[in-house]
Length: 240
Image: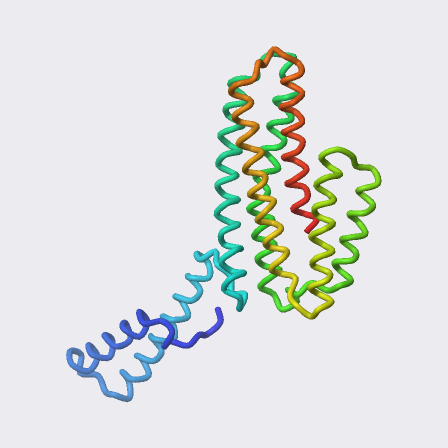
């Protein structure tokens, strides 16, 4: 654990002050003993509190309050998305039990599984952004853009549309990086947009699952398309 400034932790100072008072007034210890002891208590106490806060606090220090707020909001929205995905999985299992519905059930469960990965994606991004090398280089961004262009060649429909959105985000980030600005904001905002859009598609999927004629093959196919769209969105989070 790294030693911190005790003055930033009033609780540690309070405990050290109480120890000093008890040592002088009650125990009658010498100043040569109680003063160093109180200082040690303040230092150890503040270090412990700092470590405890680091372990329990999901916020990160980015030296950018707007970005930090956006990232923490993304964490909350991702957790809400996880909860919705779990509910949808349970609901789908109750509604889809006939043999001709198994493909749709598999598609829904797979899309829910991918939604469960988003909180970890945000944690990984948090650690990267809080590091000293958090500013994305033009070379890194151009490499990502090249990969997107390769994927576009074999994509169509919804997959192509989502890849085009990611491509535009990367082009914007490259512009920011070339201008000497941090591309972190655009990266986090793009991720937040993916989570928000995923939540909307997940809600559509749940609503249609509740109201669709599950014996109608066309309606089952429409639900599968929504499931695939949700998967594509979540996979694109790893391309940012």
